[in-house]
Amino acid sequence: MAIYYRGMFFLAASAFLGEGIEILVNMILARELGSHGLGLYMSILPTIFLIVLLSSFELQVSISKFIAEREERYHRNILYHAISITIIFTCGLFLLATLIIPFIPVFNTYHPYVRWFVMILIPVISFTSVARGYFMGKQQMGKIAVSNFLRKVIQLGGLFVLFRFFAFDAEEALLIAIGTLIGSEIVVFLYLIYMFIIQFQQLKRQPFSNMNRKVVRKNLMAVSIPTTGLRLFSAFTGAIQPFIIKAALVHSGMTGVLATEQFGMLMGVAISIGFFPAFIAHSLMIVLIPAVSKTYSQKDYPTLQKMLQQVMRLTLVYGIAAVTLFYFFAPELTSLFFKTGTSAVFLQLLWPFFLFHFFIMPMQAFLIGLDLIKEAFIHIIWSTIISFSLILWLGSSPDWRMNGIIIGMNTGSVLLALMHYLTICKKIGVSLFMKGMIQKATE
Image (cartoon, rainbow, N blue to C red; front, top):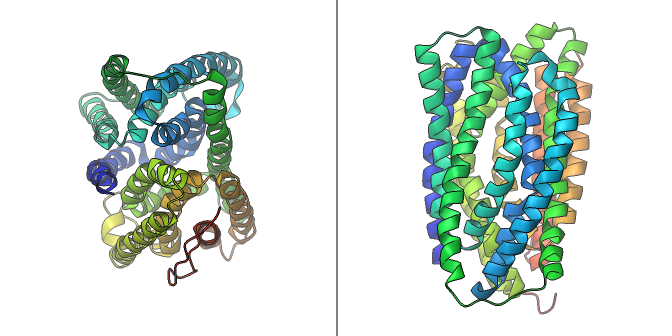
């Protein structure tokens, strides 16, 4: 277990620094773009993340899981097949994107270059995912930590230099904000590919055994396809969420400009601050996917039970501390972005959303490692349907507006966390409240 804790420490430390930089990035964006520009920036991000998800094909998850479950002598051959699959997939996706992206209406309100910036991400993310998956599977989390921190530093440095020494109009400033985000991904790509080539050269000098190409492809696809479907659904709902929220607010009687500003304060300020501690949950998720996969392949249920117990306790401790801090110091924290009390109220009301999301991320890693991706997908579908229904119903009411939208978001988070938890407990033989653990004798 020591290697897992060490990997988590590296990831958490770099992520903590990265989240601190993310706060500075959002402060710069809030100052340079204004509330309306920040709303437009936050509105396009889910669409960009959707394209990033398609480009990755969740290879970092499937490769890390497969590498963790197999002996080192098979790793070279696994990577050969993974790279060939990535080349074919990337070429097909790039050609498809060339035909489709110019006609996606969501880009119409942005600078024309934004479309082409996003297309650059397709090969960058695809090949980065192969390297990232290998390092995750080998538990070399230091390289993942450096890449995550490097992304934030490059983005912050680019924004600071460009906005400090040059003047831009509103449209150009928004283009710069998006361009620095994509530029930081390119730098991460160069770093990880360089480290991957060095590691691959070392693998070529070691004894190796071949695996059937069909077996490798089947194992990778068995994880990548359902996991991509899960992430795709989440990314798709994330991409349409801004429009659902703003449509509900407009229906309640708000103007379109005010609805965009309210959304900008919700996502750019309240969500940005509230998800700051999520670097711990994200670090846990990265470490747990290969760890749970390897442990489950060995049918070591006592260790799985112990891992779940430790994860839940850790999350409970830092989660309660975080949301308590956010609740009582919301005005001071949100004033770093805008001198308005509206975003402070949003931050206070969203405490259940944040707390339960801290549990959701590591529990999704458990579900992937336990081959319960289908169940995770079903959970997300149901929680999203209920959450969006409440957002549209309550958010459209003049009496509720943003309060109703926040109720919908909180409800979806709580429901998803509970469904994940109950499913994991049933799979590994754990009682509801972690007492009286029962080891499974059989699968």
